[in-house]
Amino acid sequence: MTSWTWHGGGLEAARRHYGGNDWIDLSTGINPHPWPGADTHSIDWQRLPERHDLAALEAAAAGYFGLDPRHVCAVPGTEIALRLVGGLIGGTARYVAPTYRTHGEMITGATPTALDEAGSGTLILANPNNPDGRTLPPARLFELLDARADRAWLLLDEAFADVDPALSLAGAIDDARRLVIFRSFGKFFGLAGVRLGFVLGPAPILDAVRAALGAWPVSAAAIAIGTAGYRDHKWIEAMRGQLYAEAAALNAVLAGAGHRPTGACPLFRLVEVPDGMALFEQLAAQAILTRPFAGQPRWLRIGLPGGDGLARLEAALAHG
Amino acid sequence: MTSWTWHGGGLEAARRHYGGNDWIDLSTGINPHPWPGADTHSIDWQRLPERHDLAALEAAAAGYFGLDPRHVCAVPGTEIALRLVGGLIGGTARYVAPTYRTHGEMITGATPTALDEAGSGTLILANPNNPDGRTLPPARLFELLDARADRAWLLLDEAFADVDPALSLAGAIDDARRLVIFRSFGKFFGLAGVRLGFVLGPAPILDAVRAALGAWPVSAAAIAIGTAGYRDHKWIEAMRGQLYAEAAALNAVLAGAGHRPTGACPLFRLVEVPDGMALFEQLAAQAILTRPFAGQPRWLRIGLPGGDGLARLEAALAHG
Image (cartoon, each protein chain N blue to C red):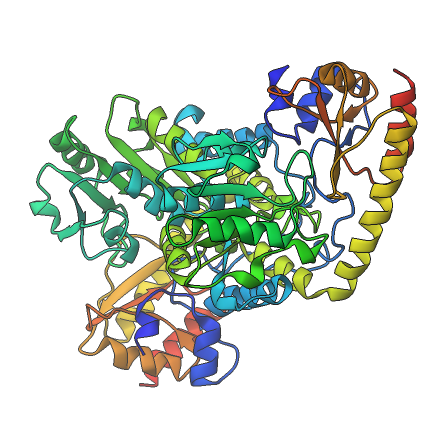
């Protein structure tokens, strides 16, 4: 079943293949507790989004990321942004592997590398990384950035950085620095269906991104929900604490089942087992979808459960 | 005020500049009667859209356009699609002018041409055209397509073709033909804020578009609303009739004010006057936003009014 190893989120496909009802999706790193305002906001679907509404979204996001709005460009999902910016930067590039699949596709001919062998050319890197949850401190990121100097780019995927804002290099974005950062709205806010992401970078890069996307890059819903979400400081602060607490509980359940979970991003954990696909199948038989990896047959990524998900995961692990 | 001549839809900017309340936006070609299901559909914002839901949207759209779903690719707005496909096709190109601004930007170095001087190279063409509403019969389009043979492309923007499906060349899409068609959801369905469009073309072109956009090209809302909208044959049929009737009424009002409206697309009309900007200002002073053109100072495009908009337009024209 290689389709399970491609991307997470294939819940309907899993339901059709394995049967069963009441599936839990732990195959992604999306917060199981969505920001609650999405359904209460009325969306003006009729009109084209206006320029000042888009600017307000980018200003709200910039305030949340911690940099000047002129360095922030909204895009219809980080996935598109990675591919678009990769095409703009081009040239010879490496990506720190293992990581998110798209990092290997965003610049033609990019080759995988270990972090310590990254050299001084253009580098694609996620922090925190996915799927292993590895995090690097900003000091290490600045070393990597300095190694590129004015010859090559650091393309930094911060899709999972929201939970620990101290990890972000957003404040270092500058027209004179070859640093581009990718941020995602849907993961931390638990609203992946909105399709909203951001490119943070020097003005000429953002100009090129805007030229490729045109005047109305994101939907009226993305503007309304994103603007209000990023301004909801109280929810953001509370959610960070809640996710760390729940990740600790997930760790305890995994450890209780004899696993040694790795990763510092609360939205998912990676476990290494003799046969990742066997554990995937064991959990799928109990209507729990997780994420195996074709190139890493010993790995299984397990997203943070919400509701009664943790209790069901605990029972399913014991049932093997 | 060159900003009014850039794109339509700047209602908030108009409100700030001219004051007044209760503005009517006649600056775009968006149907003033939106498909009524958008607000009643519950949207799953939380999850990533699944592949089979995207396939269902593309199948519903293909049924509506009249071709095989394998030739249909959903995109987050026609604007992005024009720019993306333009970049994929590249080369030397001409666009039939005057037309929608983006046609001149989608292929670097493209030059404007009159229809009768289009030659045999790659050609960008809208049918119906915007802003003049000029329509070409399929027989003429096939002549233009044949003139390109297997040497160059016909890139056909059918963003305004919904009202008269007999105009569309969608059924002629084939892997062996150098024809790409762009369709828009938001204009005819009156839901431009959804950001949903389609590329119709040979499989290799669609493969390249999908590679550029990644696995989740459109939002959960675009999938839910678009799929249901395209399946609502009853609304579609009734709306076509309604729009033709309302366009006839708009024609009568414009003629009554001494204008000779041109165009065959019911969603907008073009009038030619001694000073387009003066008429724009006259209407703006009465809180009606229309669309002037920097390069065509005698033109004013007037979108189809909804509700009491026609009566207000009639009064505002008489008030000059």
